[in-house]
Length: 483
Ligand SMILES: Nc1ncnc2c1ncn2[C@@H]1O[C@H](COP(=O)(O)OP(=O)(O)OP(=O)(O)O)[C@@H](O)[C@H]1O
Ligand SMILES: [Zn+2]
Image (cartoon, helix red, strand yellow):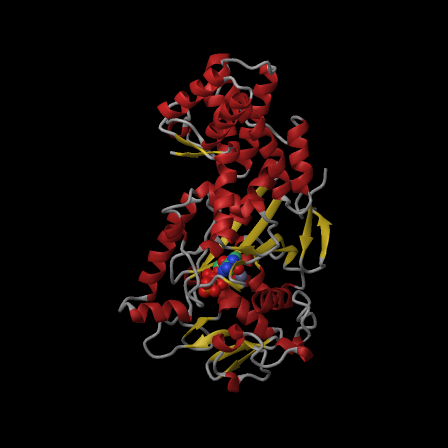
């Protein structure tokens, strides 16, 4: 089977052919560390965590680098507001980032370079751009000359002629002193020091790097001149990734990345969730009421390239979905001991059985994780219903070897997606009935009453009552239940 992924540059699905067989190099534009991360950042980080885990499961070694932008106007502003320093603000939010990501089950990158640690590489790149005629100094700043790079606009599909001044907030905000530029779309590679701001020595005078150049420098320093996957949110396509291409490719003459992958935005009422707009919900606030695995599921259930609407309903649906999966995952821990199953096993690989193959077929098509999840839900629902038979009827006619394979498959697939349960704390035997158990018992009781088997109906009511569930029979044979 071949993994095909949608490349934003060629605007088509392409088969994955890494530069070095068996190894995938991957760079993700990380966070500007001036505030707590919100659900939008969670989506981006979880998405690329899933891709990385899936590539590993498919047999690739993955070298994954994600940066921290720790030099930025917004960090400086926060430092001023808090009477703090840029370093202190960055450290605080980098620490918070790691806490949030650990809670969400995002595996750490192999390397987290920071702008402040990459200044030599940044200065080297700017000097090379200048030597090759792509950059010019102006009043202590250094600008990239977009008109000198033929391919400018190839990623975003924007042609320079069509671009109008002020089309992107980030161009004007980042480069306020447009008067010094030869062209309005030239962007700053180096900014001269302003009084009181952190600054570093350079051949162009004291100053600090622009935002775009740090990624070009980090990719080159830590992964090489051409990488396999360059990934990030689709809000970065223009100008950030367009500028990364212009910087890197002008110097190396090589493609910066073999494939450009972009995830869609988390939206609130149709607008991008963002720190700047103030319409955000932080990961830590969300985790007070929502299971981190439900957040992963929220991300998994939609296609990574599509927008994801953040609503109560979406969170509730993801939570329900997680409960179903969790009950399926719990099966072996609840009953495997009785059947003599070995609960510690080596997770299954891609071609192990029909379910892993179906999962792989779905996800190989441009990371269609929702398609892979469908396979898992089928397994989880089946295991849940077998569990109910065991719990309430004492036995199941199902083939136990097959059940074991299905359970191992579900656990293995869940592991690829970073979905895990804590069998101890989630044991439905120890902690009463799960929602699925209750639904099942209520349905059995309804059937018993329809069959006029009152004794069985009463017995089931007692089982539920003992577990602290109250039943309310409504007209028309419906029964509502409350914990
Ligand atoms: N609403 C969102 N949905 C998905 N990804 C997002 C969202 N907002 C930011 N990201 C992604 O998070 C990563 C880090 O973003 P960064 O720290 O630059 O945030 P930002 O876009 O400046 O945030 P904000 O707009 O909230 O200030 C980028 O890859 C970006 O694409
Ligand atoms: Zn970047």
